[in-house]
Length: 371
Image (tube, rainbow, N blue to C red; front, top):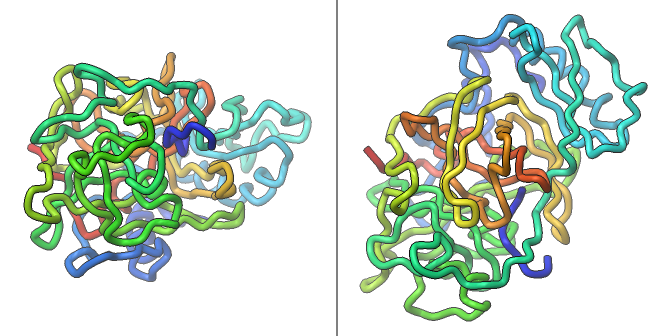
C-alpha cells in the first residue's frame, strides 16, 4: 500500500546481469533523486536489486524473460494490476498475474512460452485510507518515543497530517539519516529539502505539530513518476537526523517486541524467502517472498497511479501490512538481513510490495546501520 495513513485521502537479460543493469540505470539518473546537501549521491555501496541466483527454482530465467515479453499485453487487460514471477506447484517458476477481480480468465493464457500462468486475485495496490483516529499510547509504535527513537515507529512530514514508519537508520558521507518512503517524507514529490520530519507523524497527534517532536529534516527523495507507462524502481526518501543542536537522536533497533536490530549486510530477494517487518500500525508481522521481478500499478489517490518495476511481493496468511506501515524495513527471518523497503499493499494487507533494498541504498549513497 502506498500506505501512508491519511484521514482523507525490461526486459531483463540473463540473471547474472540484472544487478549490473539496475546499477547502470541508477547511474544514468533513472531514479531521479533530489538531494538536499553534499554527501548524498547515487554512487554508493549496497547490494544489487536483482533476483538471487542461489537456490533459484527451475526455469526462473525463462519465466522472467517470458514475463517481460508478455507484460505489454498482460497489463493492457482490464483488471490486471500487475505481474510477477513466482513458484508453481511443482516447484518450478511461474508467471503470476495480479487481478483486481474483474479479469475475464478467458483472456489469459494458461502458459506463456511454456511457462505456467497463475492468476492471483489481490485487489488493487494503493494508498490505503485508515479509519483509525486515535493517538497511540504506552509502547505503541504510534507513540512519541524518547531518545534514542527506535526504528519501526510512527513518523511523517510536519507539513501534512499523515503517518508512516521509520524503516532504518542509514549512514553516508559522514551523516546519519532516517529511511522511509517518498510518500511518507517527501509528500509524493511535493516536499522540499529541509522540511521538518516529525516523530510521531502528525496523524498520531491529532494533526498538531509540537516542535519537541522534530526528528530531522528531509535530505533527499527518489522522484515518483505518476504514469502507468513509467518504470519507477523506488518509493524512498531520507531525513537527516541530528540536523541541528538539540534535535532528538535516532537509534538502530525496533522497540521491545520487534525483531531487534537489522544486520548491516543486506540480502538479495529470493522466492520462498522468509521475511519479517516491524511497522507503525501492525507492529511485527511475518511472511514469505512469493514474487520477484514484479511490475505493478500502485494507486496513490489524488496524486495518481504509478507503475513500478523490479519489485518484490510478500504474502502472508493474515495481514502483513496495514495503512501506516509504509516505510517499514523488510528483513529476513530470522537472521534480520535487510532485503526491501515496504511501500504498498492490497486492501486485505495479505499482499505487500517492497523495493529491493539494493537500489534504495544505492540511490542515496548510504548503508544500513545495525549490527
